[in-house]
Length: 431
Ligand code: FE2
Image 1 (cartoon, rainbow, N blue to C red):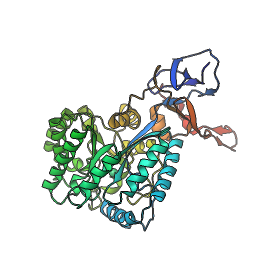
Image 2: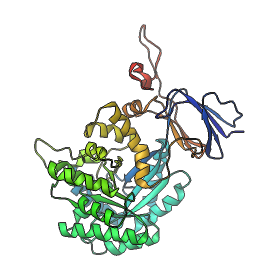
Image 3: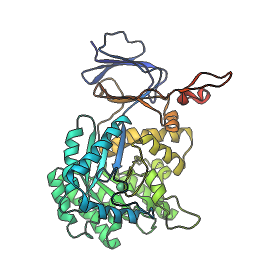
Image 4: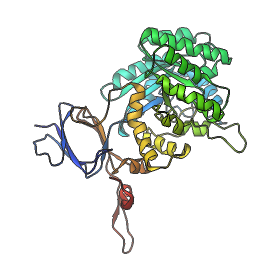
Protein backbone atom coordinates (compact mmCIF):
# COMPACT_ATOMS: atom_id res chain seq x y z
CA UNK A 1 0.00 0.00 0.00
CA UNK A 2 1.45 3.33 -1.09
CA UNK A 3 0.97 6.60 0.77
CA UNK A 4 0.84 8.63 -2.42
CA UNK A 5 0.87 7.88 -6.14
CA UNK A 6 1.57 10.63 -8.65
CA UNK A 7 0.15 9.86 -12.09
CA UNK A 8 1.57 11.19 -15.36
CA UNK A 9 4.31 13.47 -14.11
CA UNK A 10 7.19 14.78 -16.17
CA UNK A 11 10.77 14.94 -14.82
CA UNK A 12 13.03 17.96 -15.40
CA UNK A 13 15.44 15.97 -17.54
CA UNK A 14 13.20 13.09 -18.58
CA UNK A 15 11.31 12.12 -21.69
CA UNK A 16 7.57 11.54 -21.55
CA UNK A 17 5.47 10.99 -18.45
CA UNK A 18 5.70 8.47 -15.64
CA UNK A 19 4.16 7.61 -12.28
CA UNK A 20 5.88 8.16 -8.94
CA UNK A 21 5.14 5.79 -6.05
CA UNK A 22 5.75 7.08 -2.52
CA UNK A 23 5.85 5.20 0.77
CA UNK A 24 7.22 6.21 4.19
CA UNK A 25 8.53 9.49 2.84
CA UNK A 26 10.63 7.92 0.08
CA UNK A 27 10.20 7.31 -3.64
CA UNK A 28 9.86 3.53 -4.02
CA UNK A 29 9.12 3.26 -7.75
CA UNK A 30 9.13 5.48 -10.84
CA UNK A 31 7.89 4.27 -14.22
CA UNK A 32 4.88 4.64 -16.51
CA UNK A 33 1.69 2.79 -15.61
CA UNK A 34 2.34 1.71 -12.00
CA UNK A 35 -0.51 -0.48 -10.71
CA UNK A 36 -0.76 -0.26 -6.92
CA UNK A 37 -3.11 0.65 -4.09
CA UNK A 38 -2.45 4.12 -2.71
CA UNK A 39 -3.96 6.15 0.13
CA UNK A 40 -3.98 9.14 -2.23
CA UNK A 41 -3.61 9.47 -5.98
CA UNK A 42 -2.57 12.82 -7.46
CA UNK A 43 -3.01 13.32 -11.20
CA UNK A 44 -0.07 15.42 -12.40
CA UNK A 45 -1.69 15.81 -15.80
CA UNK A 46 1.60 15.67 -17.72
CA UNK A 47 3.04 18.56 -15.71
CA UNK A 48 6.57 18.93 -14.41
CA UNK A 49 7.78 17.69 -11.04
CA UNK A 50 11.07 19.05 -9.74
CA UNK A 51 13.19 19.07 -6.60
CA UNK A 52 12.16 21.81 -4.17
CA UNK A 53 13.39 25.31 -4.85
CA UNK A 54 16.40 26.47 -2.83
CA UNK A 55 17.33 30.01 -1.86
CA UNK A 56 21.00 30.00 -0.84
CA UNK A 57 21.08 33.70 0.07
CA UNK A 58 18.42 35.53 2.05
CA UNK A 59 17.92 37.94 4.97
CA UNK A 60 15.06 36.60 7.03
CA UNK A 61 15.62 39.01 9.93
CA UNK A 62 14.75 41.94 7.65
CA UNK A 63 12.10 40.39 5.43
CA UNK A 64 8.61 41.91 5.23
CA UNK A 65 9.78 44.98 7.15
CA UNK A 66 9.28 47.34 4.20
CA UNK A 67 8.54 50.88 5.41
CA UNK A 68 9.78 50.28 8.98
CA UNK A 69 10.69 52.80 10.24
CA UNK A 70 10.69 54.57 6.84
CA UNK A 71 11.25 53.89 3.14
CA UNK A 72 14.65 53.79 1.38
CA UNK A 73 14.40 57.04 -0.57
CA UNK A 74 17.59 56.80 -2.65
CA UNK A 75 17.15 53.09 -3.30
CA UNK A 76 20.86 52.49 -2.71
CA UNK A 77 22.62 49.69 -0.85
CA UNK A 78 24.21 52.15 1.56
CA UNK A 79 20.91 53.82 2.49
CA UNK A 80 19.48 50.32 2.93
CA UNK A 81 22.24 49.47 5.42
CA UNK A 82 21.68 52.79 7.24
CA UNK A 83 17.92 52.18 7.34
CA UNK A 84 18.42 48.68 8.73
CA UNK A 85 20.61 50.30 11.41
CA UNK A 86 17.62 52.49 12.37
CA UNK A 87 15.28 49.49 12.54
CA UNK A 88 17.60 47.19 14.54
CA UNK A 89 17.17 48.88 17.95
CA UNK A 90 13.38 48.64 17.48
CA UNK A 91 13.33 44.88 16.82
CA UNK A 92 11.67 42.48 19.23
CA UNK A 93 12.03 38.68 19.07
CA UNK A 94 8.26 38.39 18.64
CA UNK A 95 8.16 40.80 15.69
CA UNK A 96 11.13 39.15 13.94
CA UNK A 97 9.58 35.71 14.41
CA UNK A 98 6.20 36.85 13.19
CA UNK A 99 7.62 38.27 9.97
CA UNK A 100 9.93 35.29 9.43
CA UNK A 101 7.18 32.72 9.96
CA UNK A 102 4.89 34.61 7.59
CA UNK A 103 7.66 34.57 5.00
CA UNK A 104 8.17 30.82 5.54
CA UNK A 105 4.45 30.23 4.86
CA UNK A 106 4.85 32.11 1.59
CA UNK A 107 8.01 30.14 0.78
CA UNK A 108 6.22 26.80 1.24
CA UNK A 109 3.40 27.91 -1.04
CA UNK A 110 6.07 28.64 -3.69
CA UNK A 111 7.77 25.26 -3.23
CA UNK A 112 10.80 26.92 -1.61
CA UNK A 113 11.87 24.39 1.01
CA UNK A 114 15.53 25.25 1.70
CA UNK A 115 16.75 28.72 2.66
CA UNK A 116 20.11 30.01 3.84
CA UNK A 117 19.48 33.22 5.76
CA UNK A 118 22.07 35.64 6.99
CA UNK A 119 21.28 37.03 10.43
CA UNK A 120 22.83 40.29 11.57
CA UNK A 121 25.02 39.87 14.67
CA UNK A 122 25.89 43.58 15.00
CA UNK A 123 23.40 44.03 17.81
CA UNK A 124 24.60 43.24 21.31
CA UNK A 125 21.20 41.85 22.30
CA UNK A 126 21.33 39.32 19.41
CA UNK A 127 17.55 39.70 19.18
CA UNK A 128 17.35 38.50 15.57
CA UNK A 129 19.66 35.54 16.24
CA UNK A 130 17.50 34.39 19.12
CA UNK A 131 14.33 34.80 17.05
CA UNK A 132 15.60 33.02 13.93
CA UNK A 133 17.02 30.11 15.93
CA UNK A 134 13.48 29.60 17.24
CA UNK A 135 12.07 29.94 13.71
CA UNK A 136 14.60 27.37 12.44
CA UNK A 137 13.31 24.93 15.04
CA UNK A 138 9.64 25.58 14.27
CA UNK A 139 9.94 25.24 10.49
CA UNK A 140 12.36 22.27 10.58
CA UNK A 141 9.64 19.75 9.63
CA UNK A 142 9.19 21.49 6.27
CA UNK A 143 12.02 23.98 5.57
CA UNK A 144 15.78 23.40 5.77
CA UNK A 145 16.72 26.77 7.25
CA UNK A 146 20.44 27.48 7.62
CA UNK A 147 21.58 30.58 9.48
CA UNK A 148 24.72 32.60 8.76
CA UNK A 149 26.28 34.79 11.48
CA UNK A 150 26.52 38.01 9.50
CA UNK A 151 28.44 41.03 10.87
CA UNK A 152 26.53 43.57 8.77
CA UNK A 153 28.52 46.54 10.07
CA UNK A 154 31.92 44.88 9.56
CA UNK A 155 33.80 42.28 11.61
CA UNK A 156 36.49 44.82 12.59
CA UNK A 157 34.62 48.07 11.83
CA UNK A 158 31.97 47.34 14.45
CA UNK A 159 33.52 47.17 17.94
CA UNK A 160 31.53 44.16 19.20
CA UNK A 161 30.90 42.31 15.94
CA UNK A 162 33.63 39.71 16.43
CA UNK A 163 32.53 38.81 19.94
CA UNK A 164 28.88 38.73 18.87
CA UNK A 165 29.67 36.50 15.90
CA UNK A 166 31.33 33.99 18.25
CA UNK A 167 28.33 34.21 20.62
CA UNK A 168 25.96 33.55 17.71
CA UNK A 169 27.94 30.48 16.62
CA UNK A 170 27.95 29.24 20.23
CA UNK A 171 24.15 29.65 20.28
CA UNK A 172 23.87 27.34 17.27
CA UNK A 173 24.10 29.50 14.15
CA UNK A 174 25.33 27.25 11.34
CA UNK A 175 27.61 29.25 9.04
CA UNK A 176 30.34 31.92 9.36
CA UNK A 177 29.50 35.16 7.52
CA UNK A 178 31.32 38.38 6.75
CA UNK A 179 31.39 41.54 4.64
CA UNK A 180 35.03 42.35 3.79
CA UNK A 181 34.26 45.21 1.37
CA UNK A 182 32.51 47.09 4.22
CA UNK A 183 35.56 47.11 6.52
CA UNK A 184 37.45 50.41 6.86
CA UNK A 185 40.32 49.48 4.54
CA UNK A 186 41.11 46.91 1.89
CA UNK A 187 43.72 45.51 4.31
CA UNK A 188 41.10 45.10 7.06
CA UNK A 189 38.79 43.44 4.53
CA UNK A 190 41.44 40.90 3.59
CA UNK A 191 42.28 40.34 7.26
CA UNK A 192 38.59 39.66 7.98
CA UNK A 193 38.44 37.03 5.23
CA UNK A 194 41.43 35.22 6.73
CA UNK A 195 40.09 35.45 10.29
CA UNK A 196 36.63 34.18 9.28
CA UNK A 197 37.98 31.27 7.23
CA UNK A 198 40.32 30.24 10.05
CA UNK A 199 37.42 30.41 12.50
CA UNK A 200 35.29 28.20 10.25
CA UNK A 201 38.14 25.72 9.72
CA UNK A 202 38.76 25.47 13.46
CA UNK A 203 35.07 24.82 14.17
CA UNK A 204 34.36 22.62 11.14
CA UNK A 205 31.80 25.12 9.82
CA UNK A 206 30.89 26.49 6.41
CA UNK A 207 31.66 30.03 5.23
CA UNK A 208 29.38 32.40 3.32
CA UNK A 209 30.67 35.93 2.82
CA UNK A 210 29.02 38.93 1.25
CA UNK A 211 32.04 39.43 -0.98
CA UNK A 212 32.74 42.48 -3.13
CA UNK A 213 29.10 43.61 -3.30
CA UNK A 214 30.23 46.83 -4.90
CA UNK A 215 30.90 48.49 -8.24
CA UNK A 216 34.52 49.11 -7.21
CA UNK A 217 36.91 47.29 -9.56
CA UNK A 218 39.55 47.45 -6.79
CA UNK A 219 37.37 45.43 -4.40
CA UNK A 220 39.13 42.08 -4.77
CA UNK A 221 38.39 40.15 -1.59
CA UNK A 222 37.14 37.16 -3.55
CA UNK A 223 40.79 36.61 -4.48
CA UNK A 224 41.68 36.29 -0.78
CA UNK A 225 38.64 34.09 -0.18
CA UNK A 226 39.74 31.72 -2.96
CA UNK A 227 43.25 31.69 -1.51
CA UNK A 228 42.09 30.93 2.04
CA UNK A 229 39.62 28.30 0.80
CA UNK A 230 42.49 26.49 -0.92
CA UNK A 231 45.00 27.02 1.91
CA UNK A 232 42.64 25.74 4.60
CA UNK A 233 41.12 22.92 2.51
CA UNK A 234 37.62 24.39 2.75
CA UNK A 235 36.70 23.58 -0.86
CA UNK A 236 33.00 22.90 -1.30
CA UNK A 237 32.20 24.52 2.05
CA UNK A 238 32.63 28.17 1.02
CA UNK A 239 30.26 30.54 -0.75
CA UNK A 240 31.20 33.89 -2.22
CA UNK A 241 27.94 35.81 -2.33
CA UNK A 242 27.20 38.65 -4.77
CA UNK A 243 30.77 39.25 -6.12
CA UNK A 244 29.28 42.09 -8.18
CA UNK A 245 32.61 43.94 -8.42
CA UNK A 246 33.75 41.19 -10.80
CA UNK A 247 31.48 42.85 -13.36
CA UNK A 248 33.87 45.84 -13.24
CA UNK A 249 37.21 43.99 -13.11
CA UNK A 250 39.38 44.34 -16.18
CA UNK A 251 39.26 41.27 -18.36
CA UNK A 252 42.88 40.30 -17.79
CA UNK A 253 42.46 40.20 -14.01
CA UNK A 254 39.18 38.29 -14.33
CA UNK A 255 40.86 35.75 -16.56
CA UNK A 256 43.45 35.09 -13.85
CA UNK A 257 40.94 35.13 -10.98
CA UNK A 258 38.22 32.81 -12.30
CA UNK A 259 40.49 29.72 -12.56
CA UNK A 260 41.61 30.38 -8.96
CA UNK A 261 37.97 30.42 -7.85
CA UNK A 262 37.35 27.17 -9.74
CA UNK A 263 40.47 25.58 -8.28
CA UNK A 264 39.40 26.48 -4.73
CA UNK A 265 36.08 24.65 -5.11
CA UNK A 266 34.05 27.55 -3.74
CA UNK A 267 30.48 28.26 -4.84
CA UNK A 268 29.36 31.65 -6.17
CA UNK A 269 25.90 33.00 -5.35
CA UNK A 270 24.79 36.03 -7.37
CA UNK A 271 21.46 37.62 -6.51
CA UNK A 272 20.08 38.93 -9.81
CA UNK A 273 17.02 40.81 -8.50
CA UNK A 274 19.09 42.78 -6.03
CA UNK A 275 22.31 43.11 -8.03
CA UNK A 276 20.52 44.57 -11.05
CA UNK A 277 18.67 46.97 -8.76
CA UNK A 278 21.42 48.14 -6.39
CA UNK A 279 24.56 48.10 -8.51
CA UNK A 280 25.44 50.84 -10.96
CA UNK A 281 23.37 53.34 -8.96
CA UNK A 282 26.15 55.94 -8.95
CA UNK A 283 26.81 55.58 -12.69
CA UNK A 284 25.44 58.03 -15.21
CA UNK A 285 25.37 56.40 -18.65
CA UNK A 286 26.31 53.85 -19.78
CA UNK A 287 25.20 52.21 -16.53
CA UNK A 288 26.76 48.94 -15.38
CA UNK A 289 24.52 45.96 -14.69
CA UNK A 290 26.64 44.82 -11.74
CA UNK A 291 25.93 41.12 -12.02
CA UNK A 292 28.98 38.91 -11.61
CA UNK A 293 30.45 36.97 -14.56
CA UNK A 294 28.03 34.05 -14.54
CA UNK A 295 28.85 32.72 -18.01
CA UNK A 296 32.61 32.68 -17.42
CA UNK A 297 32.31 31.17 -13.93
CA UNK A 298 30.05 28.41 -15.26
CA UNK A 299 32.46 27.85 -18.11
CA UNK A 300 35.27 27.31 -15.60
CA UNK A 301 33.22 24.69 -13.76
CA UNK A 302 32.21 26.81 -10.74
CA UNK A 303 28.85 26.01 -9.15
CA UNK A 304 26.84 29.21 -9.59
CA UNK A 305 23.55 29.29 -7.69
CA UNK A 306 21.19 32.24 -7.84
CA UNK A 307 19.81 33.63 -4.57
CA UNK A 308 16.91 35.95 -3.80
CA UNK A 309 18.61 38.06 -1.07
CA UNK A 310 15.66 40.30 -0.17
CA UNK A 311 11.89 40.42 -0.06
CA UNK A 312 10.15 43.65 0.98
CA UNK A 313 12.90 45.02 3.23
CA UNK A 314 15.18 48.09 3.47
CA UNK A 315 17.03 47.07 0.29
CA UNK A 316 14.28 45.84 -2.02
CA UNK A 317 10.58 46.75 -2.10
CA UNK A 318 9.47 43.75 -4.19
CA UNK A 319 10.07 39.97 -3.99
CA UNK A 320 7.70 37.04 -3.70
CA UNK A 321 9.70 33.99 -2.48
CA UNK A 322 9.52 32.77 -6.08
CA UNK A 323 12.92 31.40 -7.11
CA UNK A 324 11.69 31.22 -10.71
CA UNK A 325 11.37 35.00 -10.62
CA UNK A 326 15.04 35.03 -9.58
CA UNK A 327 16.00 32.66 -12.42
CA UNK A 328 13.95 34.76 -14.86
CA UNK A 329 15.86 37.89 -13.85
CA UNK A 330 19.12 35.95 -14.17
CA UNK A 331 18.28 35.12 -17.78
CA UNK A 332 17.81 38.84 -18.49
CA UNK A 333 20.50 40.42 -16.36
CA UNK A 334 23.39 38.16 -17.39
CA UNK A 335 22.00 37.90 -20.22
CA UNK A 336 21.78 34.20 -21.19
CA UNK A 337 19.08 33.12 -23.63
CA UNK A 338 20.36 29.91 -25.24
CA UNK A 339 18.09 26.92 -24.58
CA UNK A 340 20.88 25.29 -22.56
CA UNK A 341 21.50 28.40 -20.44
CA UNK A 342 17.82 29.07 -19.74
CA UNK A 343 17.33 25.45 -18.65
CA UNK A 344 20.44 25.81 -16.48
CA UNK A 345 18.92 28.76 -14.60
CA UNK A 346 16.17 26.37 -13.46
CA UNK A 347 18.81 23.94 -12.16
CA UNK A 348 20.59 26.85 -10.49
CA UNK A 349 17.61 27.54 -8.19
CA UNK A 350 17.09 23.85 -7.37
CA UNK A 351 20.20 21.64 -7.62
CA UNK A 352 22.77 24.45 -7.62
CA UNK A 353 21.40 26.04 -4.46
CA UNK A 354 21.31 22.68 -2.68
CA UNK A 355 24.99 22.11 -3.54
CA UNK A 356 25.94 25.60 -2.33
CA UNK A 357 24.18 24.94 0.99
CA UNK A 358 25.77 21.50 1.33
CA UNK A 359 22.41 19.69 1.29
CA UNK A 360 21.93 16.07 0.24
CA UNK A 361 21.30 15.45 -3.47
CA UNK A 362 17.62 16.42 -4.00
CA UNK A 363 17.28 14.80 -7.44
CA UNK A 364 13.97 12.98 -7.87
CA UNK A 365 14.96 9.30 -7.99
CA UNK A 366 13.97 5.88 -6.67
CA UNK A 367 15.26 5.62 -3.11
CA UNK A 368 15.43 9.41 -2.76
CA UNK A 369 13.26 11.59 -0.51
CA UNK A 370 9.69 12.15 -1.67
CA UNK A 371 10.16 15.92 -1.59
CA UNK A 372 9.19 17.73 -4.78
CA UNK A 373 7.09 20.42 -6.41
CA UNK A 374 4.44 19.92 -9.09
CA UNK A 375 4.41 22.90 -11.45
CA UNK A 376 1.80 23.97 -14.00
CA UNK A 377 4.43 23.73 -16.73
CA UNK A 378 5.89 21.00 -18.89
CA UNK A 379 9.60 21.73 -18.93
CA UNK A 380 12.26 23.84 -17.25
CA UNK A 381 12.29 26.67 -19.77
CA UNK A 382 8.51 26.95 -19.70
CA UNK A 383 8.76 27.10 -15.90
CA UNK A 384 11.30 29.96 -16.03
CA UNK A 385 9.21 31.77 -18.64
CA UNK A 386 5.85 31.45 -16.89
CA UNK A 387 6.78 31.29 -13.18
CA UNK A 388 3.86 28.86 -13.03
CA UNK A 389 1.47 27.85 -10.29
CA UNK A 390 2.82 25.38 -7.74
CA UNK A 391 0.00 22.84 -8.03
CA UNK A 392 1.35 20.75 -5.15
CA UNK A 393 4.31 20.92 -2.77
CA UNK A 394 5.31 17.56 -1.31
CA UNK A 395 7.64 17.11 1.66
CA UNK A 396 8.69 13.60 2.69
CA UNK A 397 5.60 12.16 1.02
CA UNK A 398 3.06 14.60 2.53
CA UNK A 399 1.33 17.26 0.44
CA UNK A 400 1.99 20.45 2.43
CA UNK A 401 0.63 23.04 -0.03
CA UNK A 402 -1.76 23.05 -2.96
CA UNK A 403 -2.75 25.81 -5.37
CA UNK A 404 -5.48 25.45 -8.01
CA UNK A 405 -4.27 25.62 -11.63
CA UNK A 406 -4.44 28.96 -13.36
CA UNK A 407 -6.91 28.56 -16.22
CA UNK A 408 -8.45 31.63 -17.85
CA UNK A 409 -12.09 31.59 -19.01
CA UNK A 410 -12.46 33.33 -22.35
CA UNK A 411 -15.57 34.89 -23.89
CA UNK A 412 -14.43 35.50 -27.46
CA UNK A 413 -16.38 34.78 -30.63
CA UNK A 414 -15.05 31.67 -32.40
CA UNK A 415 -12.20 31.14 -29.90
CA UNK A 416 -11.65 28.47 -27.18
CA UNK A 417 -13.55 28.81 -23.90
CA UNK A 418 -10.49 28.32 -21.70
CA UNK A 419 -6.77 28.98 -21.86
CA UNK A 420 -3.94 27.43 -19.86
CA UNK A 421 -1.26 30.14 -20.05
CA UNK A 422 1.52 27.64 -19.35
CA UNK A 423 0.65 25.57 -22.40
CA UNK A 424 -0.01 28.53 -24.67
CA UNK A 425 2.94 27.81 -26.99
CA UNK A 426 2.88 24.05 -27.56
CA UNK A 427 4.99 24.29 -30.71
CA UNK A 428 8.17 25.15 -28.82
CA UNK A 429 7.57 22.83 -25.88
CA UNK A 430 10.66 20.69 -25.24
CA UNK A 431 10.31 17.17 -23.94
FE1 FE2 B 1 22.75 39.67 1.20
